[in-house]
Image (tube, rainbow, N blue to C red):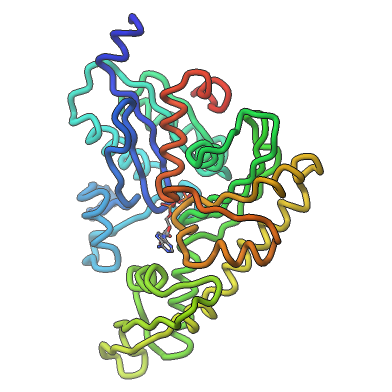
Length: 344
Ligand SMILES: Nc1ncnc2c1ncn2[C@@H]1O[C@H](COP(=O)(O)OP(=O)(O)OP(=O)(O)O)[C@@H](O)[C@H]1O
């Protein structure tokens, strides 16, 4: 195929296959889709599975489904917990980004969690190939996030990126288009939500769902005290009386609830700094640490990291989109693509 023909007709894609959200970028157009990585599946009596809904529609169903329907997050905890459903989800997102009218099979770059195994990588590649990809490239999410945040990853200088996603937080030091040292911990937004659920249960005997916990975190969650204490009314089920109940929680309480997992992220950053070769550590002291991923939006997390490390800390311009924007930049530039992506 002539290259200009390919450029004209194919719709090359970059995908951030995240544990919480899947984002799609079309070459020349930018981000075209941003949906939760959730699939609603109906199970029949013989164990067969039928996909009922994907994305936003499926997320609304989380915790609200009757017995034979389950809303699944197939990538929970930064690993592919369910291959079949992950493949179905990827196919759905690719096809909807193409409006089902693929003219030439596209080139696809997929941002994957850094901790996944070779078997899982193969599963992602196969799923993309089955969905019609002509060439598949994989890029590790921290590398993509660093490119998306505008860090000069191909230069011989140390850059530190902390990508806090739904399932994992990845801390990476990047230089010369390679990851020099990386630490991945299974602490991300999901663990923060879980910590809020446990706290409210222990302190108030109130059971709240994952969605409510996430709203509390996004509304009044903080990693470091804010000037004013915030409050929020929350609803759940009283574990003693068994009836719905409403109560008010404060940002101080939520910070207490989040302290342990937030500290786990801080420790991962400190450990990575300790393991960084001295020349690169010097670069990081000058340039600072860049935060990306939705978890980076937790209020005052940057302040806490600044206090704990004594280094400058910056938030990527659009933390939730940094990975897909970085993968998209690799798609637009063959030069970056060759340096940072692994061909499928
Ligand atoms: N304002 C906010 N405050 C705190 N957390 C937030 C905020 N907005 C989003 N999040 C959290 O960010 C997480 C999702 O981030 P993101 O989309 O970057 O993850 P992902 O890329 O899907 O996950 P992973 O990198 O683990 O594969 C969710 O846990 C969500 O609750």
